[in-house]
Length: 259
Image 1 (cartoon, rainbow, N blue to C red):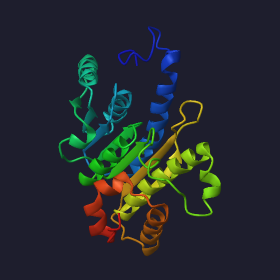
Image 2 (cartoon, rainbow, N blue to C red):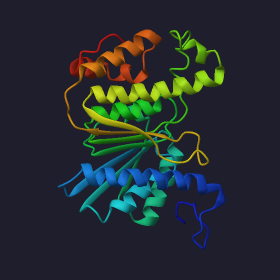
Image 3 (cartoon, rainbow, N blue to C red):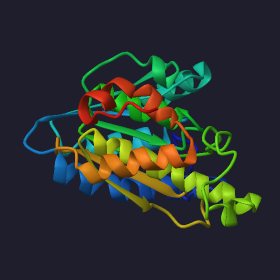
Image 4 (cartoon, rainbow, N blue to C red):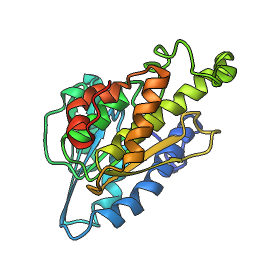
């Protein structure tokens, strides 16, 4: 943590870094058993951290799994060149197999990936991360979304009786945030993932404490899941950004085309 500038010379986490430390710690707490349960019987592991920032999570993942698999490769993607430069210096100092790419998430080159993760990629960057993971056949996808504006701008008038809630600005914002993540989860479910949405950390460390966890199973689409999704977007008159990114896959897998 000293190399990551999260701790002081005595190894104590700096007060200004405590919230980030806790977020990474709790993210790993959920990630570790998921990988151990779902990614078995292989010697190598490739993890891509999309929107990695200063790579606190990236290095945490690499450190934990380096002794669990014969080969662990970690790629951190962030569009800021200064973040890439900083992270490469840290990787060299720690002598770890972590590579970094300065690029937008959507522009990340296609490649084999076992696990795709994203911690607080802003707004539609979370959708870009999920879409990239799906397109590259990630077995496990774990994302903790950040700010969500895209769907907020689409909700002009709520179907009744939901107008009772959306007339209050704060309530509408929270409701549409939850709708955004629920639609993301439903899209993943329609594409053959087992999905759950959990609170991964207490609200005292971040208000953005929801995690979408998805594991590829290839399960057949259930009619009720398709009907619920189509009814939701029709009644609310919204088109999730993720649905636009994965339109071809949704049509092929579930026959969903009314976006």
